[in-house]
Length: 281
Length: 280
Image 1 (cartoon, rainbow over the protein chains, first blue to last red):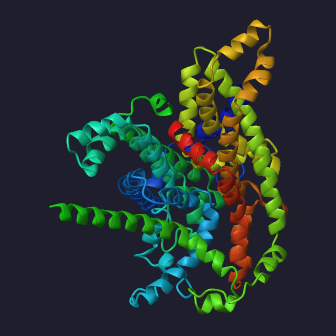
Image 2 (cartoon, rainbow over the protein chains, first blue to last red):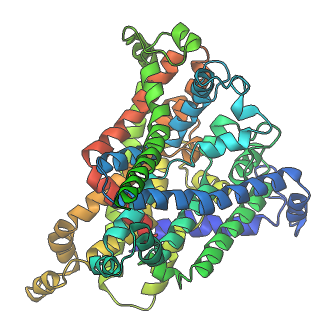
Image 3 (cartoon, each protein chain N blue to C red):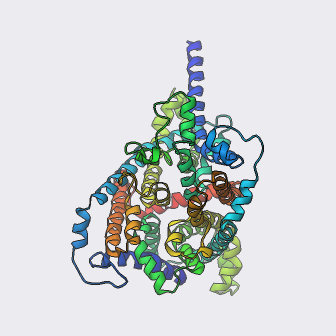
């Protein structure tokens, strides 16, 4: 127990404490300089890049909760019908979760490349020449959408979680519904989904907090370009750190932390998940 | 009536397979395209994105292995991932044993704390972690990276192992205790062998995490010879600026170990990742 606690305190509790503490100081060199109260926070609230990053984080979170998770659920329901080859589909959907985001970033840089990229090549074959010359990752309108498209279809992890949960639902419930003449779709809507409510809540929390943590893909693909259109808080923290704006990086860190806690609170309320201990079971 | 029913069923299975296939294509196609392109010459990659290679150009792989620090980075990644995984598993099992078997005041509080550890975006604390590593003299060192990875993976591992231990009957330990075995004796002679299946799950999970970790590696490692594979990948983009064949070959090499682990232990990986997620 003691080694676990030592490591947890050193790499979770102290950093988070240090984060809160140093956000009230001026700290732009090796040494921390002076106490400046809320000045860092005031600077942050006047920083347009911060707001753009926050907007993007919120947009990502909403898409995760209301598009990504429902798609995963749909796939799980289809796979649960055990159509031919469902195990192969499950394996294929799972593969992207094993490949590193770094490698995926390089892959998508190539896919979205305007001249030799896969996407534009496919568009050319389909005859959509109007779109086939776009530099997707650096186009003011398309950049954020292109970034979203790099993860939105990776539904394997959550689909597998749902699938495992669906299998544990007692079969008697469905047999009773069948006798009452309920169609398969009605059975899904009236039995499966209500019974999955808790796990859907947990998955949304995991997906959204995972999104808040997402860094390397953006860092490698666009690093916030064009014109901060693809900036996020995690990215902003790292950029500020590299500029040795330590205390400002930490202030943005506090914002990210608060956002994370808000997400957890909001969705556990929404799905009435009870205490986080229940989440843990 | 009967006909209509059958038509609807057929239409439904069409839609079903359509959806399944669509997702399969978007999940698989980009990686597959990289794999195919890694066997093409640079000119054909640039000229026709969708063409298949006429002959297999292995020279991309040769140049990927030669030009960059790829073998070195590959080795570093293996060292860091393996040691971090072992360290993480041992420490997590010790903690999970205490949490699963002993009733004490802080038990619930500690469990909640570890659960929160999974959810909190720890990358908000990059600056403090960097400075802690500087103070511990663990900055720019592979040992530092090993310790950090072992620590960051603790919450997930502890919660998985705790619920695994809870599913093992207590009777064996009680029998050992009656026979006069002490705490450590019970831990090594009873708990450790019994929890092997749980340990394997945790280790595979952590291996994939460590192998793919990027942020803290790039934050802490500055010497070229200490780069892990994921940071090296970032530098490949610059090094192979006009040699896409080489870049794609390097990507394939970097992806393959995780894929092999996945295919060999598919059941364990899936149960581990889903268990890890549900436990969160």
